[in-house]
Amino acid sequence: MSLRSPLGRVLGHGSAREGVHHWWHLRTSSAALVVLGVWFAFAVLTLPDLGHKTVTTWISRPVTAVMLLLFVTVATWHSALGVQVVVEDYVRGKGARVLTLVVVRFLHVLVGVAAAFAVLRLALGG
Amino acid sequence: MSSDSRPLSPHLQVYRPMYTMVLSISHRATGVLQSVGLLLLAYWLVAAAGGKESYAVAAKVFANPFVKLAIAGWIVAFWYHLFAGVRHLVWDAGFGFEKQTARRSGRLIVVLAVLASLFTLALAWRHLGGAA
Image (cartoon, rainbow over all chains, first blue to last red; front, side, top):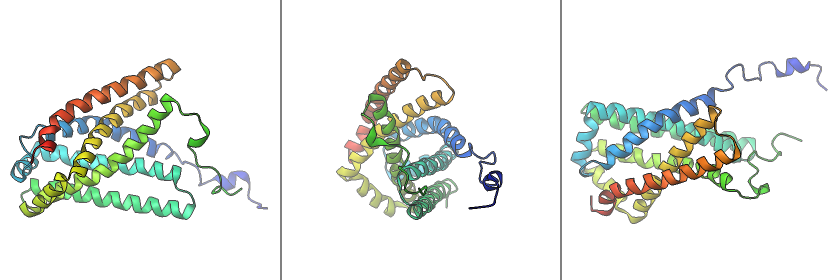
């Protein structure tokens, strides 16, 4: 039996006005991805071929580089948030859940940084 | 009861499968599929940045029939998730919740996803079908 008041027990455990943060980021990123995703699909599919020269020349163009950087970073962010919800919904056991969340987040950061670095390297002529 | 032994939220097994429910689950499934696809995209970019040799290795990976099939599936998942996502955004804005409207918008996104998939698969055919 705790002597703390009900108010005392919940203080500091609430949303602290951050409750919609995750939800809102998932929505704003999805709206951006409608544009970025359609751009990416058609830009890649209308390339004359997918050989190394064609692809690297395409990526090194400023407009492509900027759009591609936006696409990979926003897609990675959206994916991280989305997969997080799936893990929270289906992974049983607090330990397993927290571990999965951390691993999934690390993987997303790794993939996002690697993809962004690749684009920058080609765009800046490394 | 500890909060950890409670049932997890989407109680999939207690509902009779319905059209709109299948669409909702598909949205999630296609989302996860695209997270996997993201790995492929990152690999493609990294291989391109790595130079001719690493890109040649990647080209071999992408020429694998199973990978080609996965990419084709990914294209379908991409369009479905995109249109279903827009449907969700409309819901989030507070519109389209009526049963009939929700069913109609469900049919609409399936039709749109099929059409967009066919169009992009046709475009992708020369990349996927050819030796690239």
